[in-house]
Image 1 (tube, one colour):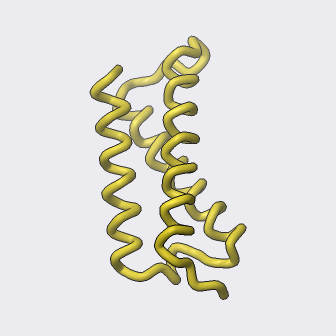
Image 2: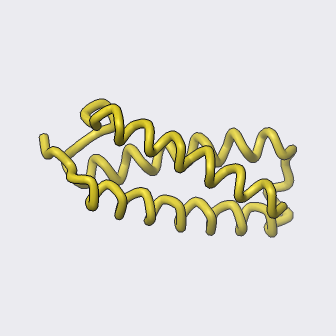
Length: 89
């Protein structure tokens, strides 16, 4: 099990922000994915969690092994990102 440092974790969160922003934009523009705003928010929230877990696994880590400060940072970044996405839509 690898312990992530703050800069490595920040890189993961930056990548995740970009990835989810692109997914949201593509989903909002694609007529095949027309869904209620709340459903889309739940979908993106779930995708954030899944992608975060996958990125951490690639670093031989997991959400369960993060320090509480890192967990809180991920939660705050997720909330901020979702608010940003839905304030622009």
